[in-house]
Every structure is written in structure tokens, then in C-alpha cells.
Length: 357
Image (cartoon, rainbow, N blue to C red; front, side, top):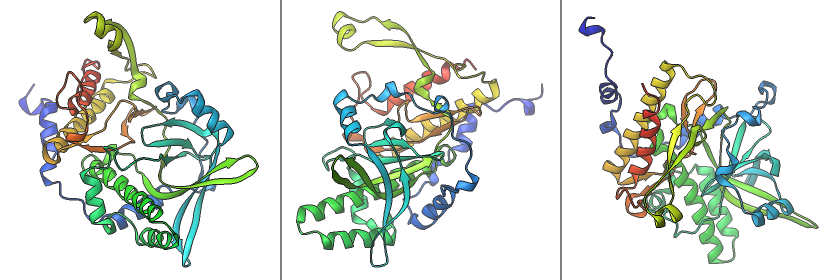
């Protein structure tokens, strides 16, 4: 075989592809970012496809089970719907009605609850958080200084309108915090979208109004940052994992900090041919390089876990749908790895090695 016909090594492909040196500071991206998403995520009932069956969704409820007390609370005071709120006609204006029920709950993370909409999209409702949370580090300060870069004019107008209506300074501060958090969500999204755009799920961020039903009382209304995405058929990376033998260390670690040898079953949800496995492996390497870039160039840790990544079915393509980044010094490393991003990278590398390419 001639040298020209030899397949280019994966490492060389990565060098040619990952031109991260050209990555620049976050631009004033609100207009072109949000306008495109408004079109892409617009819901047209006449063109709606059949709902994706629950068994095909990237959901493993065992990953994030709520406590029985929380489940009882959600049963007594269920969320009924979410609106997008903005400033129009010289006041607060509600649009984009999104009906949800307890049966539409499909998962939760550290910062959001996720609900399936009647059409093939999800809405993620932000949880209440304190400013002391490590999420609100240097990027939050960046958003606070230049809020006009991350919020649309109608959102800035709504923020000022609501603050003028508030009697207490604490209420005005809470409104300010929630709108800055909305801008922060967009900034996190753009950090990763700029590096690996085709692997990041298109996401529209908005200030939402959540309605929670209360028996014999008016609904409990809460303003919170929200976002929504398309719903894809697929499975979490974690759902491809089979647990095998426990790794024996010593009595204390085996009892309180057990570790397991993991077997990644690449054929669990269908036969994946070698070319698709190569594409998944290549995209995983891109994720690793993006993670390393953020650490080395910006001292940021991408909070990447196996439940933040899905592999679509039947196409078997890799997609990331959750993107939070933390300051390196605020993200806790593990006992084994002094640099916290290594935990995420090692998990991905184990998964790639299981392909046996």
C-alpha cells in the first residue's frame, strides 16, 4: 500500500481539527445566538412528529432519585406550567405556555429540574441557589460587569421594571441575582459551543415563571432562569456502563469508598458498526481536548459527567446537553487526582478503550 493511501492517525486528525489558539473572548453574541435558537426551537403543532417513546429517552431515573419527602411535596404541590416572561407593552408579558405535570418529570441535576413537554422538547427549570455556590465564580463576576452582553434589551428592561416595583432592597438584590444567573447560563453555554459547536445541543435560555399548584390556595408563582432543548432519542453515557467486580483495596476503603471495575457495553442498545465507533471515539477526543483547553488557558473545569453526555439512537452520535464550568480552584479534586478534570478525562478514555478499535 502506498504511503498516500495510509489512514491518517487519530492524533494527527486532532491536531488539524482543534484550532483552539484562535479562540477569543466571548463576543456580544445575544442577537445572532438567540434569533437562531428562536427559529430552531420554535414549536409548530402542525409539523410535530410523533412523541418519542419513554423507553428511547436518555433517562435513567436511578441516577437522580428524589427523596420520599421531596416526592410527597411534588405530589401535593405539583408544577403545572411554565411561561417565558419578558418586558412588552410597558409591563411584564408572559408567552410560550409550557404545560407540565409530575408525569413529565424526567430527571434532575444539581441546578435544574428537567420536564418533558407535550411536544419533543424539554424545559429545564432552575433550582434556587445561593450566591456562595461555587458556580458563581469569576464568570459570574464577568457577567455582573457587562450584563448588557448577556441579556437581551427586553430582559434588561424587565429586570429594571421588576426592581422598581419591589419595596425591599433584599427583593431587588434577588431579582438582580436571578437575571445575572440567566446571563451566566448563556456564558457557560457559549464557552463550550465555541469549542465544539456540533457536539453541543442547541439551547435557548430565558427567564421563566413557574406555577406550582396549592390545594385551596392561589398558585405559588416563582421567577427562575430556565432553558429548553429538543428531545432526542438516545441514552446517557452512564447507561452504557455495566458494573463488574469490586476493586479490592483495604477494609476501610472497601467499606466506605468502594470502587468497581467498569465494563462499557457499546452494543447494549443496538449493534454499532466500526465506522460509527471511530466517529464517537474521535468526538470524545475532541471533548477531552476542549476540557484540557479550558483548564490550561482559562483555569476552568468543565463539569462533565457521564449523565451529561448522550449517544443518540439509532444514529449513535455523541451530544452534550449540560454545560457548567467552574473556576479550577473552586472545583474539588478527588483523592486520586489532584487536578479535578482528570477524573472526567479518565472516564472518557476508559470508554474509548472499550471500543477495541
